[in-house]
Length: 452
Image (cartoon, rainbow, N blue to C red; front, side):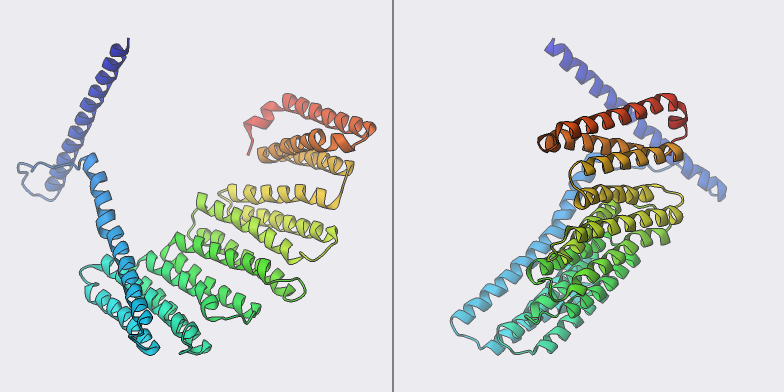
């Protein structure tokens, strides 16, 4: 039995190979016929066509892997190993007191200059390799400047800051000139590191976040101009890492409240316009990465705004913040419906987030059996709206909310509710679900034929 199955598999594979060969032969004949038609249209004589070789599928995969290793990976590893060697050499010279601090910094700048000069020299013939060398040179300049400022106090804070800003501007300019995203990523990392490398412990939150906002504007403009998606994602990630770190470690609620509340709002507006606006200007639909970024933005934007009120003991403050954020997302759903008229996904996305935030708002604002009744009322409103407008998403959200309410009743409320409260809640949920089921049965043709 096993041999028979193996023979069947072998026969199928053989047939597949024959069909593949026939397909390639037909493709070859089509290409030759197209060439003959082109010659006839241009009044050229038709001669015996040279055989056209189609690429083999297996070879392309092998060569692509070899190209990745030879053209990219080896370059990157080479630069890293070279920099490690330079660092070890400098450290050895420092440990043996062979060179003075000034000479150490000078030699580090010279090493970076040699890498930069070599990148310029090789750019015309070996652009990819030249770009890697340039990235290594800029990294060397960044950390040498930091060492001159922090370790040896050779540069003042304003001078070191200005030098790093100029390096960042030059790196951005070169990334556009080379048309290489990896150089722009290096500039982005350097730009976000500058305030922490040379900013000291000044604690000036206004200066920090104003600088970040300007950096984001530049990075996002480059991302839009060159369609470098990674820059947009990295800028969003770095911005929220810095913001959350500052809120958790430096912000105490008494000072900088305006910054702790204002910058998350500004950041949310900046990246929402970037993600949605760029697609709108290019007349494209949002892709999966865009929706992931918007989800990240909504989640951490809400979290950062809530942290701004972390010293408030009144729960109604958090309830009102949640309600306002939900209303903002509801407004975004309406705006997206008007702007992206050809695609309803983005408006439904924001509508879903608005509903989820409203669900979160209820247990913050209310307690006990009131939560269950408010959720039931909300689920009824969602289902009615989905039924009238023929929007499946609202009806699905309604059913999900009923499920959450029922789960809450079984797992949490059973221990705290009185018998009367349990009876009322179970009967309410059961009756409403039966009514919804009846409406599904009665209007199923209207619902499922013209659903949006």
